[in-house]
Image (cartoon, rainbow, N blue to C red):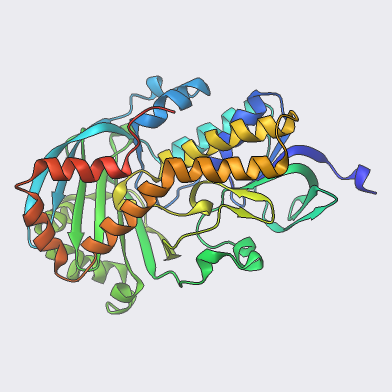
Length: 377
C-alpha cells in the first residue's frame, strides 16, 4: 500500500524564505523534494523586509537575479524615541530592502526550476513516522519522505499537536504592515519607538517603503481594537512617526496584520523534524535580521540533510549536528534580540535609553553587531 504513496528524499512544511531556499538547495543537488505551502504565490507577509548583506552571496549562488532588481542599498540607521530624541548611525555591514512578496515568489520559482515539487494551497494536518519514514497528511494528499523539515511561522497546528516548548508562554504581540509611497532616503532604515511598541520604515523595491510595527495586544485593546485609533493616539505621540504616517500614501486598502506573535524559546527538533527559520524561534523584529537568519538556517540544514541522504551521517548525527550548528550561529543573536526588545518596550524606558545611547556611538554599533551576521554564508 505504501508503494502507492509518493516518496521524496525530503519533505518541507512551510514555504517562506527558509523552506523555499532549503528546497532550492536540495533540488540543486539532485534530491527529490516536496514543499507544502498553505497559500498561493505571490502573497504579502507581515515582515520588516530588510535583508542584511550576509545573505547576498548565498542567494546569488542559488541563481537569484538580485543585481538586476536594483534594490535599495541600506547603510544608515535612524532611531527615535517616543519623545522625539533621535540619532543617526552608519549601519554596518548594512543590507538591502526587499519585500517578501518578491523574495518568496522568486525563491519559489528557483525551487521549482531546481526540481522541487512545490505544492500551494496545501495545509499539512499531521506528520508522523512509520519505520523511520515520515508520513505527511495534507489537504493536497499524502506523501512519504526520508527527512522532514518545518519552516512555518508563529504557532501552527503542528505546534499544538507536538505541545512544543514555545507554547508554554502565551504570545502577546501583534504586527501591522503597509507598503507606502513616502519621500525618504533610499539608504536609510528608520526605527521609531512608541508606547509599548516600535515601528520600522525601510525602502523596498520599485520606489516603495515598508512600514511595519510591533506592539502589544493590550495596546490595541485599549484603543478599541481599532488600528487607525492606535496609530493616531499612540504611534503619533512620536513626532517623527506622526509625520511619516501623515505623509505616507498607503498602497493597501487596509493594513496587513498578524496576531499572537511570541518570542519565547523553541525546540529545534520535534519528533525528528528539523525546525528552520521562525519555526525554530523568532528574532525580535527590531533587530531587522529575520529573513537573513531564515536563509542562513536553511543553508546549514541543506548541507547536513544532504550528508544524511548520501549516507555519510546517521539521523542521530544529523539532528545533533544541526542543533549544535544552529546554537553556534544564532543562539547569541536570539538572546541579544530578546534583551534589546525587552529593554526598549518597558514603559518610559525608550526615551531614557535613546538619550543615553546618543553620546556613545560605539555602544550603538556594538548592539547592531550582536544581531547581525558579519560574514557571508
